[in-house]
Image (tube, rainbow, N blue to C red):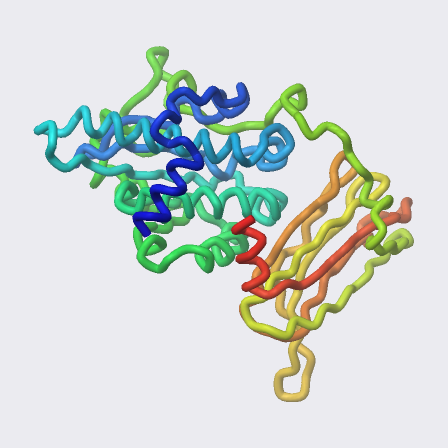
Length: 344
């Protein structure tokens, strides 16, 4: 592992990574992520993951730049922690992460490229900085959160995942205050820190995510999915829907989809169909949600806990005036194939 780490550090130029100049949008998006220190001297990072513009990030950056930016942050963390240690050659502290999932949308939760970027980033921390992250608090999780969570957890070691603590909308403020002093913690996270003007969101000192202006996009050309050779097409009459059945043969496989409509939005949902005591039973996996794909096609992924029959639903039943033309491609891949994709 040491040889592999040294080889990776050389390839990424980790020892001189402070010289790397990230793209402007990454500077904006990573500014003010360090919000202080916990009671044991660990750096606290706040990541508003639920409000990150995933599509904007993938449209405005290249993965190598994201990787170098992450390494630059981690190396700077180590430098800061070394400067704070009591003795020059003594051990240094760690990093505590707060991931806020508030505002997580279906599009962000299932974005295939965004998930791949996230997994790669977490693996860098796990594989090359294994002792740096002490703990992670994932707060304000919702039903959508479980979609990416199941995929991400399967790509990380159990020991790494065990450092994470998961919370819904309650109970996390008390937990944060047990490890972080109130004067270090912004008011909106349960502390008493505010901006000089009293703003509890600390918008002047804490990054809160938000939509990325298209002026930063470097992948500007939109190639319509309808032009792809392997795409399928259906036309939904007004007030109608269409079901697409998929047979998944292996537990842990993933369903990947991409679709677009020419006008307005379309309803999308994912279900599991099984026979129980001789009767057909439909289990909702992804609640029906209306998605606008006029600007960019919708991409997503879902991890299947078990083999069987899955049903993707395209729904136009709410539209009494317009039919919808849908272009789509859907496939299933094994967990092994997904691992190979993430490895790049």
